[in-house]
Length: 157
Image 1 (cartoon, helix red, strand yellow):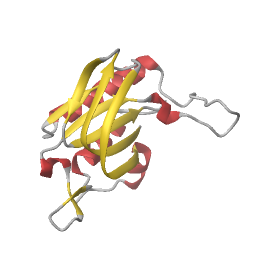
Image 2 (cartoon, rainbow, N blue to C red; image 1 turned 120 degrees about the horizontal axis):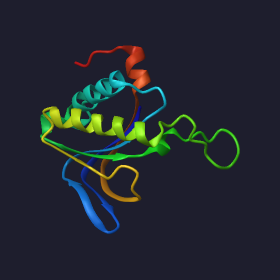
Image 3 (cartoon, rainbow, N blue to C red; image 1 turned 180 degrees about the vertical axis):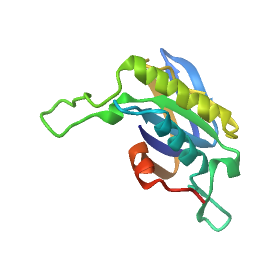
C-alpha cells in the first residue's frame, strides 16, 4: 500500500463537474494498493497517518498530528502509485491490485480512518475520472509505503 500524503489548507475532488468531497485543513491522501496488501498494511498505514506529526507547533517545528490540529482527510484512490516506469515509455501496472480487490481495500482503509478520532474523512469515487484541487501547505508532501512500515515495525511516539 502506498500513500502520497499532502498537508493542505483545503482540498476537493470532483467527478463530472460535481464536487464529491471537500475538506479544510488536513491531509489529501492519494492511495494505491498492491497485489499483496492485507489488513495489516491498512492498519499500519492508518496508524501512521493518524499519528504522523507534520503540522507545525507554535515554534514552527513539525510536532503536531492531524488529531492535534483537529484536521480532516480527503482520500482519493490512485492505482497509478504502482506504475512501473523502468522499462519502455508506457508504465506497467502489473503490481497494482486488481480493481475489485482494490475497491475492497480502499473501502476498508476509509472505514478505519472514519473509525479513528480524525474529525472528518471524505473520499473521491473509486475508479472514477476525478479532478483534484488542493492548496498544499508548506508545501509538505510525504510518501508512505506500508511494506516499509511493517518491515520497521516501528511504534509512533
